[in-house]
Amino acid sequence: VGWNVAIILGMAITSFFAPYIIKTISDRHYQLELKGHGNILTTLAFLGTIFIKALILFVIGLILFWIPILNIIFFYFAFYYLFHKMLVSDVSSEINSRNEKKIIKKRFANKIRGHSFILYLLNNIPIVGFLIQTYSIIYMSHFYLRETKKLRGESS
Image 1: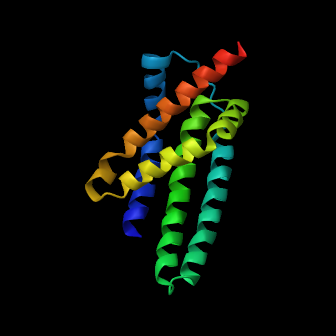
Image 2: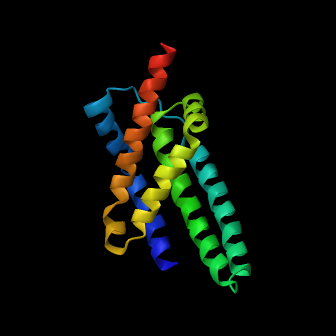
């Protein structure tokens, strides 16, 4: 649990630098206009709902604490849920408009989950987990920027 809390805290700290990272990647490789959406209130409300849902998953995990395999699955699922939602919302809200975010989410939901799951597994490797936080944002930024460029190319 402590390691997963460290991953989530590291992701929260890294998310403060995400706008600069994403802008640099966009300027160097994609030359896309970043149409970020949301403000501090909508972001805090979104994060509040994410944390409430994760708390519910933790409570279910505590109820299932005495069942050997299920307790590990639910705890890891709760932390993965937090990691995935924070990473995806941080990157997509900086790059896409609300409409573009919905379209990309609808088209590539499984791919996005797969990428974030692999990044989450890499974050659970003890030494790598501290070093890969920024890489997670860079990797997802490239994915979202590439798909946004295709999407905007289709619409023009």
